[in-house]
Length: 263
Image (cartoon, rainbow, N blue to C red; front, top):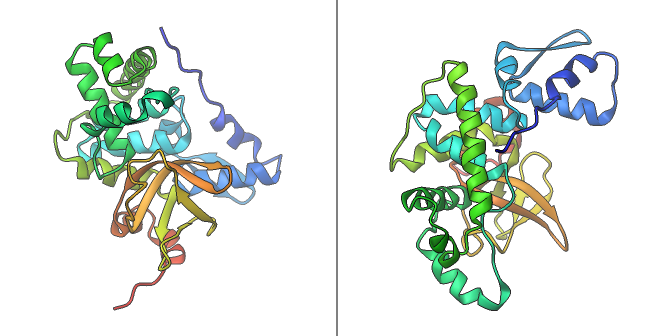
C-alpha cells in the first residue's frame, strides 16, 4: 500500500513570524496568493481555506485545486489528475520502439494538453481492469499506475472527511481545464508575438517540452506542472487554458501580469 507522507508547509507558516529567510518569504507569498494564509502585522496564520489545504499531503497548489473542484463539478477527474502527478511517470518510452510508442499513445492524445491525455490513459487502464498485457501494448507502467489508484483513494478519503461533494464532469473536460487554471494560475505562460513563451509569474522565457502533446501546437495560454532547466527552460505537463479563466482565478495578479490585448 502507498502511504503519502504528510506535508509540513502549514508548520512553516507558523515559523514565518520568527524566520524571515528569502525562500520562506517567497513560499508564504505563494500561500497568500492561494488564499491559504492571512497577515496581521508580522504575524502570518492559516486561513480557514489554508487549514483545509493543510489536510492534504500535497503541494499547496494541488490541495487548492482539489478543494476548488466541486465548484466546477469535476472532483473525480481532478483527484485522478493530481494523483497522476504525485507519482513517478506512468508512461515509458523505449528509444528503440519510438514510432510504435507514439502510435500507441496517439489514441489517448488530446489537444487540450498533457493532463487530459493522462486522464484518458487512466480511464482506459481502469476500463481494462489494470490488464498488464494492455499496459505492455500501450507502454504504460502498470506498477506506477496502480500506485496512482492507491494515492487517489487516500486523497478521496480526505475529501469525504471534509464533506466535499465529489462529482464527475463526464466528457465536459473544459470544466477540468478551468479548474486547473484556477489552481495552477501561478504556473501560467503566455505565447508571445515571436512564437516564444513567457512565464507570467517571473517573465522568464520558457519553452514547451518535446515530450508534451502540445509540442507542435502554439496555444495562447497554458498552465504547467513544473519547469525543467536544461539547454532551455522547459515547461512539463501542460494544459490549455483561456486567459479569462486566469483572470477569474486571480484578478489583481493577472491585471499586472497579462500582456494587454488590442481592442
